[in-house]
Image (cartoon, rainbow, N blue to C red; front, top):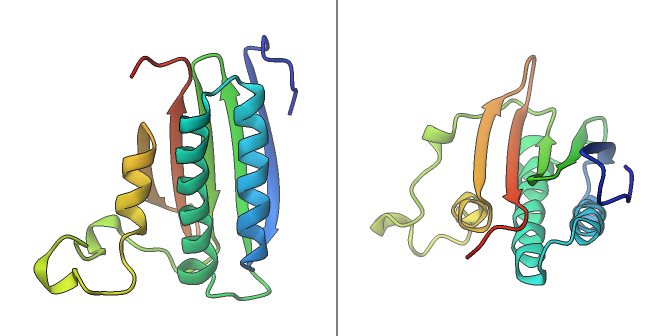
Length: 147
């Protein structure tokens, strides 16, 4: 991926192992690109947290730590936004099947808030089943956006 902030569009693709160490690598790569884009620090932190949650979900829930499966990370930048796509090779799921973390019966659960956090930290969030297997998550954070 080019570090030239004036370029119209650039992208990078990284193949990650299904380990929690991959979470740190994914976040570091996305933050490096976000910084070269001139993204303000608060937005970098938000995007970093969304990427961490998404990759944890891909490793833990999608690939179930299976060493034969990978997490696909794609980072694309344009003048207007930074887009991050994370895909696992698991069984896939439908967003509508995820229990509401704010429902009374789920408030004390130790997990289940990741998607809610991701949605709060990015400008656009999309989940879809992969073309053959797995789940693809798309995160978009706009650049130079007024609060």
